[in-house]
Length: 402
Image 1: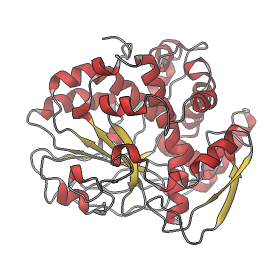
Image 2: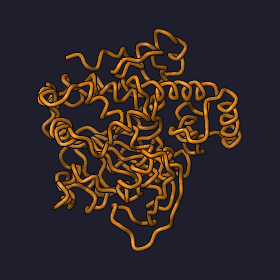
Image 3: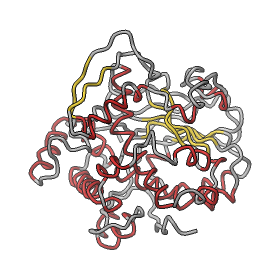
Image 4: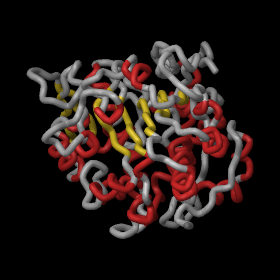
């Protein structure tokens, strides 16, 4: 749905409404800039009442998630450097790695490497879920702002690539509850942050798995998906430089000497990051200096300084808008249109497209448990939120159950 012509007036009214209801304050780490507010408006098709409810639910979740709130959880767990990180990547590989040709952060997931039984030998599923939550937070708090600084323009969403090589139905049933809960958190509390999703190396029979997953997603999100078989390379290289695409997916990047692409953290978000994180932990203001064009996280010869409140490093928040046809890369628009999908000219098997997530806002329980418990409780306590949901509703099972 295209934004209304009076978008600026609605944005102004949205901000005033949030201020009147004491739902927004200077320094809020959710982000207080126009781009962040526009993400919530787009997720609710610029319906002011529904966007306000979504924001309210999100702020409540941020204050209560895991019993400590997102800011404290982010202090406790550095998403780019926590003790079990290597083990997590060995059992559920997902990581940010460089940017695509439009400057959008790349987020890779290798579902074929998922092994929750192995994961639990060195950490609890509760702890793993916490690392998932802080990774979601890292996107809007650090990754997108740094990508925007490097590109010298707003970067409103991430390009997600899911590799299904080696992935089977048994793994799917093992991870489905975690995956469903992750989708729900992303759509409810980090709306419009996925610009594009490419599923590659889709195995025979993937349509069965996809039919199970689709009801978890808002229809706008589904519109942003492109599905490819093993001949995905040409489609990906239309949108990603060879130097940024990992060799395992047909690119040239190996991040040699940096632990490989999965562990390297390569990207503009790593520029002087240790100092910036330490400053944020002390509550100090930080100065980010990333030169436009510094897309791969390497030090630039010259850079402009941009000062922000450390806890609120969040300029242009990601966005989730729909590409047009599944086989034609579309141009990214300025404020509400999102990136395109990979061209399907080299695709095999099934190919579909996906668009803007407009999932339901959920309000966590007054005293949330340490698992992501925001869905069932909200629907029970606030049945009116069902009217806001644009995608098919589902009943969230306990994520930590077998």
